[in-house]
Image (cartoon, rainbow, N blue to C red; front, side, top):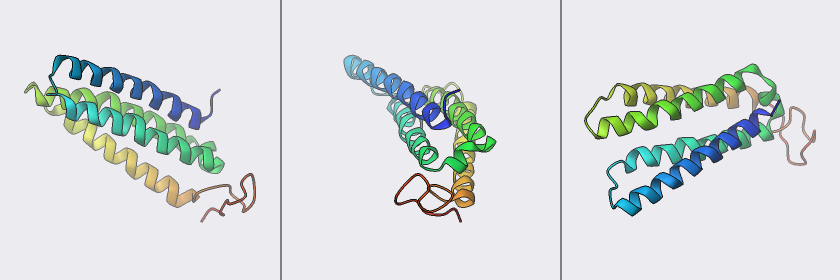
Length: 137
């Protein structure tokens, strides 16, 4: 089974590729109407997921907890609902998915905040696995 950090990074890379292709398509058609959705795909799908992956790679205690997988799944759901939701809102179809995706984004960040406050950053014991590791608080 792949580590949670690898899942975050790999999924983030896939979302980044999708965002890049979408950006090229917008540039080629000179239609940037959906750029806010494109931006959220890149921001949450790549940047946030990469930050989360880096945190879990640096903090094995947090990565080992079942909550890390819940966080991963919640973040993926956020991207898959929020991105098309913003696009649908922009074209005037519906705002429901954008609103739901926004709530999921807040929940994902709130969960990350909880995980960081609970586990700190780095190895559980100073010096365990990393020269500059700090003990969990």
